Amino acid sequence: MSSGLASAVQFAGSLPGSIVLTLGQTLVVVCACSDMVRMMSVPRSHGRYVANTVFRTLAPLAVLTVALRVLLDAASGVWPNVTAGMFVLVVLTYRWRTDTDEDSWWKGKGKALGKWLRKQAGSRTLVAPAAGLARVALPVRR
Image (cartoon, rainbow, N blue to C red; front, side):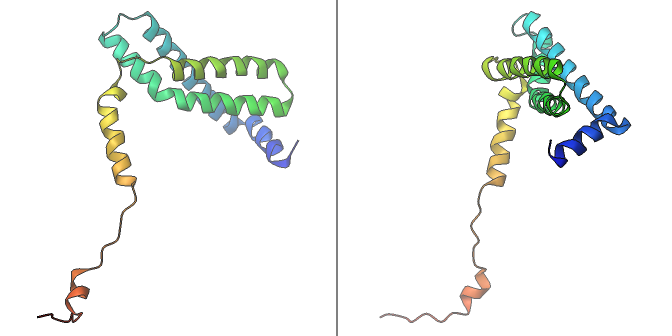
């Protein structure tokens, strides 16, 4: 095991590491429960809208949390936990990537927010100041 993984496993065994991992697992449970509510709710209902928005928001963080936990378990050699974690990771990723549901905040305002963020983060060209151009003497043609 590399020294980086050894220190990560050692941190996971400490009290602060256990608290961080417990909060991450709580996030995964909230994500899974909101997915169940989303599956059981009536289409185009408010409950489905909220559950889908929560799931779509928390799914990337939940996938990262489970992947980190699986990596730590693999480094520790706890193979039953690796198997269970990989199952949860595959299910979360599959549900997040394949289920296209129209009842979500991300389909409306989220798209507009993403478009605005891409526009803000886009490359900008620098324009020379107008004062610098005024001092240049250009020849006049007649």
